[in-house]
Length: 238
Image (cartoon, rainbow, N blue to C red):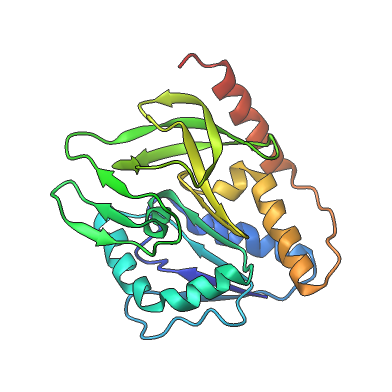
């Protein structure tokens, strides 16, 4: 089982590498041998062939823009992998890269990969921060976490979760972009710990793609963390 971890040195601002460790543990619990391949801006090639999962975390906006420019060189391979249904997770501001463009606070425009129709325009004066509850419009599943961004998407057509609670200044009404088995979500840090259903979904998908039977496993710490956070956010006044 091969996990491709993109820009771990540039895009790991909130301990996002925890998502890779969590998925690695869950895949090992399914009986797989797991290989983690790390790629960054000094690499001259990023190969998406034979990859079972792709992850990219969040970082400073300047780091994100450098990563975006580098990843653009390998856009065809990434898009083919998305079309082929390879599971992927982009968290925090890394999923900005998947849109049409990013306009920074000083007016510079970074071209995105164009996988989704939204663009991002960042603010100079303030950031949008806060704890949020998201609800998947298809499944009704709820996800929790913290958001800290300099801009919000210009269009929410491709976004599949409603923002149903905000404790903070986050103005978004929707979040989470989805295409095939690719998810982009604004939540930061170890998203898969706080939201075990997302981790479970990825592991089930990987097993199905490998023709392997998925074995149900219990992760009480993760389940309690999600339940406790969801309860606290639900009961806190916005």
